Amino acid sequence: DTGVSQDPRHKITKRGQNVTFRCDPISEHNRLYWYRQTLGQGPEFLTYFQNEAQLEKSRLLSDRFSAERPKGSFSTLEIQRTEQGDSAMYLCASSLEAAQDEQYFGPGTRLTVT
Amino acid sequence: KNEVEQSPQNLTAQEGEFITINCSYSVGISALHWLQQHPGGGIVSLFMLSSGKKKHGRLIATINIQEKHSSLHITASHPRDSAVYICAVASNFGNEKLTFGTGTRLTIIP
Image (cartoon, rainbow over all chains, first blue to last red; front, side):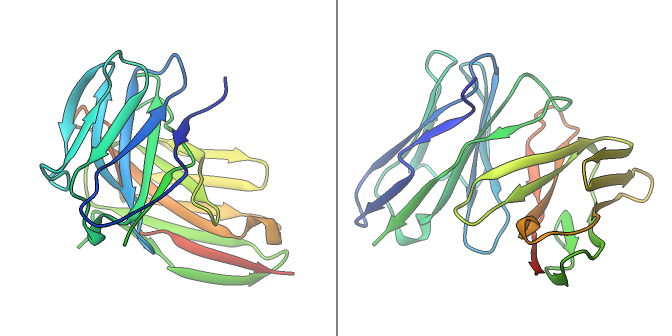
């Protein structure tokens, strides 16, 4: 068990470019969550998957954001036409199944949009 | 009003002091999490609890469901405890998504 991994750890991009982040959860974990954290704030929920099904999306997730978990294993989060306001830490977490199960966090991907 | 409120926002203490961080929430929950975040962003789960009290080493977490309040205590604090401590609650509406407080920045001075 290597824990939750995220790639890349840091991304600097110019406004208007598209970026894609990857999250590899702990292998037997069915649930996968994406959160976003801006400086000085707690993380905010973006979306979550139960296996390959995306079950909920936050209103924070505009139509420029899309997330997938095609085979119920790794997940990708894509941001199209990035804006400076997208600059944040994007965190991924996974858990076995439900609320009684602890969420394990990845190291995060820090996005800077210039 | 935020669904999850933490206090204090910042706390500086001398090494060895007993530390208490408080968390109040306003929604129905299935579980409450205490998380630790070090500079650089990595988040580590310290406790997940839905009732009573849990202890791990020098850390103790308590929750009062009726009062919608939880506390995190650190005994014999040490400079390596310096971090941001975040309280998060898991919704009881079936998705178990976490709603986070803004965190308490703890600095322990040697």
